[in-house]
Image 1 (cartoon, rainbow, N blue to C red):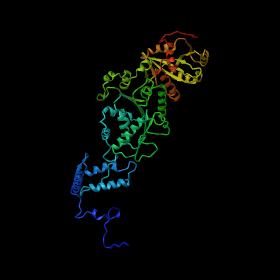
Image 2: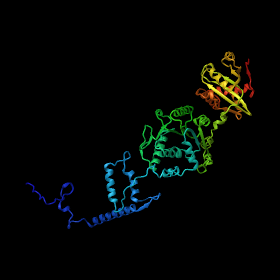
Image 3: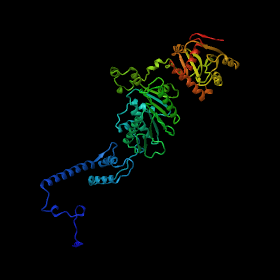
Length: 534
């Protein structure tokens, strides 16, 4: 039977899906819900309206901010909702986020509660940037102590720097995290490479730097466990890049600053690991001259020990007792069985091994006495060892030594030796003939040198230990006259000094300390049996 056409002027009611519900399911004057259902629904309706009214009144109230600016409370709500509603990778809302936003503000809107949104103040606004203390407080970090602020300022200055600090003094929190974040906050173009022992530690620091920046209103274009990049930064280097010390990705990076945080730790201070870290630091200096090392000393020959005596490196040590409020109970640690060696290294920045290294505490001298001096050459005739040349002059009760070590045979060093002798006015020296015979002495005499042959027959280690008895009076010269300030001589002098300071029994190379000890015998400072003079 054909369906009757509906009147054009008559509206048609449709239920869900366009289907008119049966008559018995329609609400009418005679068809109403049960009293219980009506009462429950009415109660929920009233509760919802009451809650919305309370929220709207609270956020529609005019409030005064810390800087004296007055604004409607809804502004604060909107600011907090931005992080919830906005996508993490774009500044645009998704369709579902937009629907949620419109629905929320339609419910929350109230006559007179809306004012046009003012532009947020950027870090470069006239109000200026906050200081470091407020910056830390904004990120929910405790207020830094003055010493911690001093540590941060020292660590983030240009050039080569090293900070050795007691355990628990906040080196990572207020330098690696808040300090680096504050540098980015002040200069969005600042780029830093963070080098850590383990990959996970670098990832934790990287993410925390991002959190601190966001807490201070900085918009990030990228936030990950490897990189932090602020919005608007141009270039391949991010503001912060974290890499482990074993990474192969150092090449190609050109950061403005490099921060090495605990790159060697007590859990692995083997010789292989120390050599690896030394090589990494050497490579890092090829990327930028602005490098800072943070940590505690671990071994007498680790990178921290070398930086301690390195000329041109600014050093800051913050041992136990420098920040009394943060000092831990060391007696409790000792009672718990913590070794004294670990306590001395972690809190007092001292290495017990240094007591077993005879020349470890020898100090440097930034001058060499004028006048004449005597010298001693410990030759290498095959080029596998070093040819060491030591010279000495007295300065009151001190013996000032200047030395050079070349990793090549003695006859390949003749030009360098002659230049050094002229620069320091060495008028007489001895040449060790063990293994090379008399020929080198005759060659040098034909060249006009005032040289004496010297043959050592006693125990080398005993001779060096006898010389070490005078370590309180020994000074190693670490400067060069203008004519010798060239990389070849600077490297040879550094090799000599390092070999002396790091000498221990069965050391891989002992040519420099042996030359120093033989020179002390030659000038009569110590005595020992020697034969074969001619």
